[in-house]
Length: 301
Image (tube, one colour):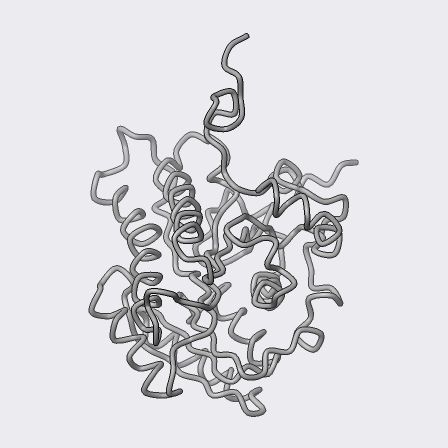
């Protein structure tokens, strides 16, 4: 009998092998991050907190978690410090939709470590629930964009501003996306379109700054506090996969994917064998109406 928990995984599966649990190639001990500082937004709980634990185990110089709920930040900091063997952990209360909060966040990183972060895992996000266009209050619908798009842009903007040379920034930005952005599914228009917009933002940033590495990372379906009950039967992806794949993305071996899409479910080693084609053809970038000349099409024949 087919595994029904894969119903939302198979339609966006690229490689022959599917991973839903940690495996040797992406484990922290096989992807050390000594000397690196990572900022994780939405780092107090869920996927963000799981990623923070992964980076501590990978021996990062610093792990910074940011979020709106101080109690969650304190809980996660305590658990990180309990396993740290030299990683400095910093928690900062911040709302990513508020420019002053995000600017202050990077100021605290520089005051603590003497420089800005090397990697940003833009994990903070929001989903309003299942509503049709005529049911979802306008402010509720727009709040999703405020967090998923404005919040992402604010995080990127001040990351660039925090650098010693903002005109030629370096480092890695990983935005946690969603496969929902690739399908028109009734009642999730705010979430799906905001995640699609976020992916396009990363592609523009990639085009604007040649030394800045950007990636959109699909986290699979994870049983977090935000997940809707409808998706729980499919939520079989390990919460640490996002953090572990981010370790791989933070290394030069992933340069062929910059500006493009990757999923925690995909076999990274298989992808590496196709690196040349993925890089040269931009196979994992979004495309607008393939039949049109702008995307290499010839129109109606």
